[in-house]
Image (cartoon, rainbow, N blue to C red; front, side, top):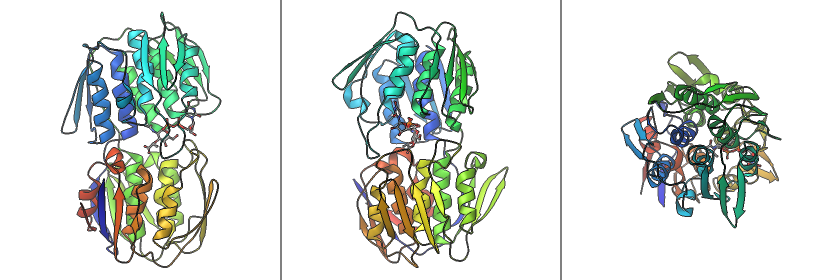
Length: 416
Ligand code: EPZ
């Protein structure tokens, strides 16, 4: 547990570099199991979720090491197809290893990742996809055993889009004989990065970014490299920190084309945003106005992970806004903590009604989840006085050097 001490009131100014995308790199780390050779991943962020994935790869017998922003993996030595419970529970999205393990070994033993701060994290869509590809799936308590005597191409129709289940299906389909078609696939940009990686291994994959993805299996066996794109949620976080403090911040390298819903909301709040080849710059002067209605949706809708950050900025905006969370069932624990800072928020199930106040006041808040804790830090940057934000290790899961980046922009903060 660490505690962030933040003295609010400084306008953030400056230029920072966007970190590599956590949600792009994690499925690639899992997919590297398929190859039986070396992969080099560039622009890889330093995160505890990446460390957890490296632990899993090493447990399975692979070599994996991160040097600076480069992560190298050699999966030739893979000698195990079971991931112990304690490793599965270190990272929420560890179920992404199921498809690659099954594809490489014909067998996979994992435990359910369990629920998290956002609510239950079911894996029924993951298992449905693997069964469609011919796997036998048995659940024993919180354990899952998958076996196959050879995956075969299939049609997989998801009842609703799921990022992780789409990724598991794409990776396992690469090890299947024949063609697979995935309908109602998730369209997040991270799916496109995974497609790029799988193609570099020699797989025929097309359709990422659309609801229909086609995959034809391949015989793996060549070393590859890939550069991870910038993290769109971390970039959105820094822009919301600039917005709430009335600052002027450029996020170099930000993939603003993947962030349009967030940028449009910030512009609706009165921020001036410049999109360019070098990244995105936000200037906020004068009091923000409310963003109106914000409903989270699968991509290309408003991303659920950016909603906490936008809500933090909305708490001091002029006017009222309504947030509707359509992805996760318990995403509002951070809103209760924002109210300790004087935010006027009324929660009604998946709705959060926010009435902007002139100024937040410093408070001591409890840790909630990755994006919730980032929202509390964002709000504290504009609160009057010194806030103490508890962090149970969530920030390190998704933010590479958040403290030093915010300090480089002028924030008065330190952690203990
Ligand atoms: C990915 O999680 C991201 N994580 C999440 O980011 C992000 O919030 C989420 O996608 C957005 O959809 C990574 O990419 C590592 P889903 P994932 O499967 O794949 C339900 C962060 O902060 N569902 O798209 O787990 C599920 O309960 C994290 O970086 C099933 O019902 O999300 C949810 O309501 C948080 N059955 C909805 O689908 C399943 O088998 C979308 O979840 C799988 C999911």
